[in-house]
Image (cartoon, rainbow, N blue to C red; front, side, top):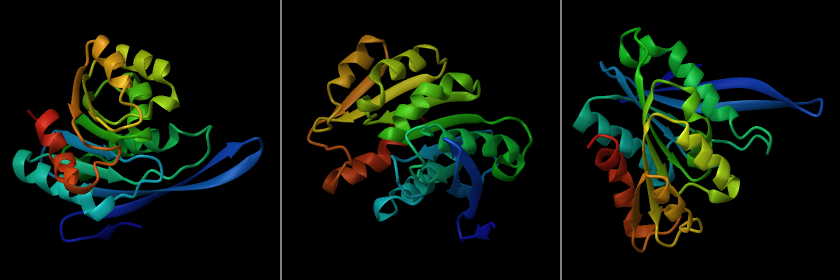
Amino acid sequence: MKQRNMAYTTDVLNWQETMNSITIDCSLDIALHPARSNTVLLIIPGVDGSVNGYEDKYIRIANQVQEKHGVAVVRISNPFISSYHWESNPRRILDYIASNTSAITTNSKAPRIKVMAHSAGASIIAKIAHEYDNISDILLVNPAEKLGGDVIQSGLKSCNARITAVFGSKDPSIAFAERLKADGHTVRVVEGSDHYFSGSYLEDFIKLPSEHLFS
């Protein structure tokens, strides 16, 4: 059931997945920041990331992006389902945006989608984004190479979106930055930052969409 906040509306998607004849009950928390715009920023956290993020960082990003750029924003949680269902949450939210465009952007035209994704969320959207023609820009923050570096690279090579990858210099996948750079993607390294942009680097994390998706 949808609930209304001062600045955004929340919703929950519920569905079932099956694996080896076992049924898994799934749910996805959603927050919608509507705007009269044909652009939607979709924020996908890492595995088991919450819809608001640590210290409400994703709310802060949504508010900052709306204030500066006037676009709609969709935020989600990213609960782990199983090792066979990594793609389920991103696909469900992309379908949700397509089915609820009028409520999100105030018009029925398919929106241009810009994606900011972190960690496992970044790795998965990199693999599947080429299947969605209206994804125009992707910001990958510390994508997890362990989820399949070769498949990530292959997915990005098939994608027409503008790709930017940002890594903390202390991230476990920092070596993957060179592989993405060799593929011709824009890559930035934030010196001193870890996987989570901890401590004072949180402010750098919050600024990333404005700097790389709307510049």
